[in-house]
Length: 99
Image 1 (tube, rainbow, N blue to C red):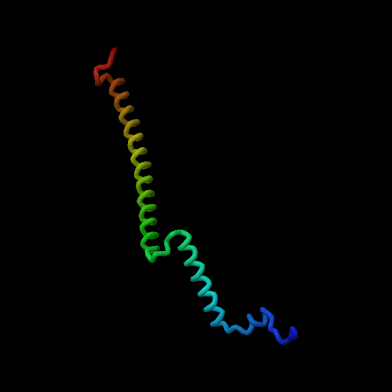
Image 2: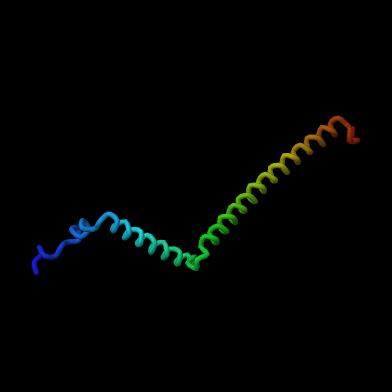
């Protein structure tokens, strides 16, 4: 057999029709996605639900963290304002402070 009788890989790629190449890429992508899901332990058909639940959990965590910061800031603001009011009341002798 001569080298002229054996088409090279490049020649074979040129012989592929566009549709065949797209199908080949689709199958390769699908197999890759299945391998990744299996590697992550999400291959049992419930991957979409599991990912949705994880996203909901992450969103709830972010909401809780944001609420905790807001509560902390409100608490500090209230404490500062209360201290200012108590200080003003003592200064104005409204609370029976010493002379």
